[in-house]
Length: 114
Length: 114
Picture 1 (cartoon, rainbow over the protein chains, first blue to last red):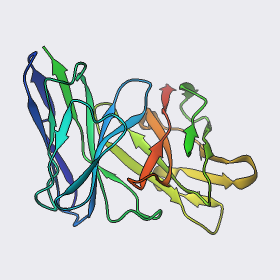
Picture 2 (cartoon, each protein chain N blue to C red; picture 1 turned 90 degrees about the horizontal axis):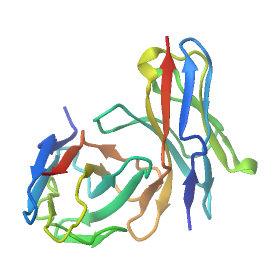
Picture 3 (cartoon, each protein chain N blue to C red; picture 1 turned 180 degrees about the vertical axis):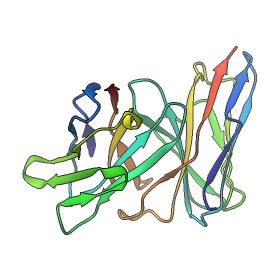
Picture 4 (cartoon, chains in turn purple, blue; picture 1 turned 60 degrees about the vertical axis):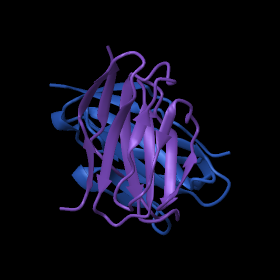
């Protein structure tokens, strides 16, 4: 089945530690996105990539980094510079960037600072 | 700039009752509109989408939505709610910005009473 796989489902981070969230898709989609979800705030865009080897900052990129070395993969690293990383992280992909291209989402990763 | 407003943070209905979730948008051109549903701890699933044509669109799980350009609204409806419909619902509009992303509302949490 085609879809987006995020791992792990739960992740715990110690203070000062970098952690990487995995996002893999087998939908052959060009565009991929990382969102952060906090209660009552909807989805906020962290980073996006419209093509391999290219990515751009979204609205809340500080303290995060990404790479896009393969079309299928778009990992997100939460660095120690992110002061409030506890949140639910969602990865999404779209076939293209046209308006009629819906977003498909992974099941999310819940990150908690311990 | 585009935006989406979901005026109701939380709605409670009894099982079997009808449901209407409100969505108002601001968009500079003909919008592409989406409704997504999110169960606790899960990703977002597409319920329905509107691109053009008939302003009443049917989706999965018995949901429908009506696009009203004059009111800048895209309200989600269901004639008879089931307990399994309890979830959070997000309206989205797009694409926009350099990311050509979808802009999401802050969500409406639906509680279904037995």
